[in-house]
Length: 226
Ligand code: AP5
Image (cartoon, rainbow, N blue to C red; front, side):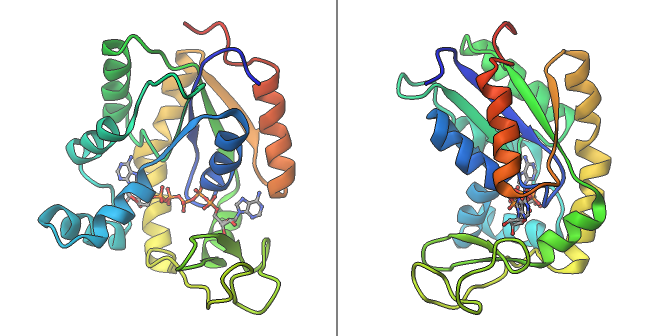
């Protein structure tokens, strides 16, 4: 069990494997996992004006406005005793969001201890996203090519037909990747200048990437960053 508080960000383009690894790492180290994409997918199911607005933005692959993003993050991020820290997956996505986060942490006497940048080439991202499926009942994630279900297109647990995320079509994927390179990639230099950035080659298998991340965490890479 880790002895230091880990407050980390997983950074990387769509399909880099942030969500997959955030699930595994947050369980392993008892971290609070915040996925803004997941929170927005839930919100977009509601019939509220904000829900409807978010759904159409996500379907186009564009970014949800910063004020909405930040409200959602503030509502969901806790600094309780039950966690060894937090893991942010999909947030921040631009410099303004990063500065909002820094200010919010300072107000709460917290600090960011590491940012991990997932490196994956563009062709691999598109392939992973086109092949992604999930179970509409239990939410388990699959990939027809890299993490296939045991039986053709059926959830291993629920035995129901797997489905695609509505934004996993080639047109929206292209926009999401463009959005990443325009808005989010500048965060790499931003966090490098703060000496918080660590890079991980995320092209290997899920198990292999998990081991690379675990090595980073176990070696206390985040320790003396206050
Ligand atoms: P979000 O849900 O965050 O989507 P994303 O950023 O496009 O990222 P993905 O979930 O597609 O990729 P991932 O890196 O998590 O990959 P995963 O592990 O799933 O956001 C959705 C939308 O919400 C945005 O487009 C935007 O509109 C809005 N939004 C969210 N946050 C926002 C913010 N802060 N500001 C503004 N708007 C915001 O893996 C992908 C696939 O690959 C899976 O099938 C998986 O099984 C497979 N896979 C994973 N790892 C491996 C591996 N190592 N080897 C082989 N296959 C793998």
